[in-house]
Length: 220
Image 1: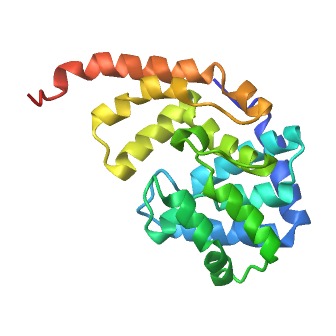
Image 2 (image 1 turned 90 degrees about the vertical axis):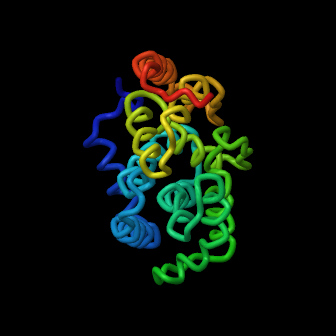
């Protein structure tokens, strides 16, 4: 089941076009790839995840008519809070607060106004996952691009890797079967992409729950 119905080569070519046409974003992409490639303690929120989300953002952002000069650096850097020791709940806010420092360390120069726009997207990129309300089209695109990763086969794959990263117990992982129905996307494009990937995740975790129930220790 593919949620993004675009040929891989087409998506890669689109990304290359943005990289070649925007030196600032090219620097963001290269520096962020380097930083996350060195962060071996992040098996889920790693460069591969940021790269997939970036491609998601191209699909959603172009369809919605968003300002890609804001969307692309924001989605590529959306998880930098983890590089500063933040956890799953705080990494959006920490990443937004640390954005200026992060860019300075990478010798990447943006205007104060642009940094504020990018930070706004990073701060609320968890969207309905954390009951956040992204403001503005670009922030909504970034939130949806990240949330797409929770649906379909990649959603299952990414959740299992997150389980390992945060050392979640199996019982918490199984909560995804019901949580997936509470997630809402911000854009019409995002909403159209994730169905029927929602049911795929719910069905997988329902079967996993049934298969593992004999092995879960009774806490009573």
